[in-house]
Length: 600
Ligand SMILES: Cc1cc2nc3c(=O)[nH]c(=O)nc-3n(C[C@H](O)[C@H](O)[C@H](O)COP(=O)(O)OP(=O)(O)OC[C@H]3O[C@@H](n4cnc5c(N)ncnc54)[C@H](O)[C@@H]3O)c2cc1C
Image (cartoon, rainbow, N blue to C red; front, side):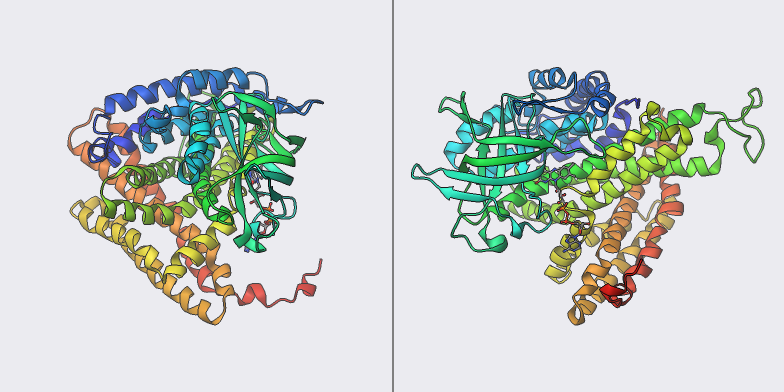
């Protein structure tokens, strides 16, 4: 089985040296008191819970999976229920939720590292509570006062959990095709009828009630995405005082058998005239669901980071221990029968790739969470507007890039174990299986790429790029006085300019042929991810040099940051050259072949 140790030192580095959380909080209403002592205390407790309670259930969940009982109830793997109860008793679900609903009102940037630890320890388990965040945001932002009064407190406390019910067997990406019906009743509620598939945490035994957020269509609504509304469909109908009464007509028809995340129940949910409560206005459902999906997308980016970190930690331990062959440059363990495999350059390539993606990815997603803080808390309207733009731009990149690199790291992690990684004893093959889903749900990589390039970048005639490219060029200018950084900065300036000019070029090509967008989009989003991670690594190196100048007692920690940055610029960032070339190649080689000629 895999083992997990929360990377508290690296988290502190990002929060203190890189992003200066304390200063960030001083400008944020109701956060002025948040300081590093408080953050360390919270993260310390969360790390113990994740390492001691949640992580040991990771293999159990994979092996036991979930069981659908004859009565339609779903049993989660042994230990999941008790761990969830401890999570609720410890107040963890409420950590970064509003005080008006009983939350602790801490900023999102503190909730995120806690979710990272829970999720790296055991992603399947963490999903049960994780999906409630989107349900809460949707109800809080678009629900009626009555809905907030009934649903928010139990969701915030973790007594109830949430789901997101979009997908039907014939529609996943194209939600405009959905068929689930919502028929108005005389009492103002709706009868929901239809079948949803692949619903995460759709039925389970962890919480008293499950709040399904369901997309459905009224009989007279227009076809396509303009005719979708969103409903709350609780498993048990709540009473006015917040207690629960009769069972609603929603049931789990089957559990999906799947490649990974076995500990999470992925359900076929049947709605047989179930009582639903409309959120907001009719036919605005898809707009409202973007609140949910945006959060879920950041959460899925976090999953990518989780798999990179888990892969790195476990393969590092193994490669320091496993003895095979001698180093090409002379024995490094002359007293032993062979050298540990960490001495071999190719093994180091695999380890450093995992370290660079895990630590760089952490810097990137924590930065995004500080933008979330500004968006939800700042009293400065202009600051909120800018944070909204930046976060909207970063979200598809974080989702697609961190999940893609998370899967790459999980794979490299297995490779470090050789054939032993392929058998289940070490748990690293589970990490590969669990990581794969993150590139699919919450919008596949292809869909994130279209969202970024088609909707956000070209849809604004490239303006969406401006805040981020200006930030990068400004960062490079401000960092020039540190001469060791200059090679990094030169590369970043070049890539940023190429990013801008390439965007213009694709925009022009798209005016002649719309397929130019789809042909370039995945390469474009990956290019964007590599560049942003380059910025994260240059900034990390800058922060490390500063600490070394000050005479830190942790020299090796900070030197390792600089060395990882050097590795990233030398061995990973050049992938952008290939991407530039393939992006510039246009759609013809993809589209010319007639469908009938795809012969096998
Ligand atoms: C384990 C698991 C858990 C899930 N949890 C949930 C959940 O909680 N709630 C929920 O509602 N759903 C959930 N899903 C469903 C998931 O979100 C969908 O599977 C996903 O959105 C893709 O839809 P699809 O499977 O229908 O694929 P399709 O939409 O059929 O897509 C197939 C392929 O075609 C590509 N494609 C489609 N359209 C385009 C286009 N216009 N341009 C370029 N490429 C395109 C896609 O990128 C993909 O590669 C879950 C799925 C799994 C496997």
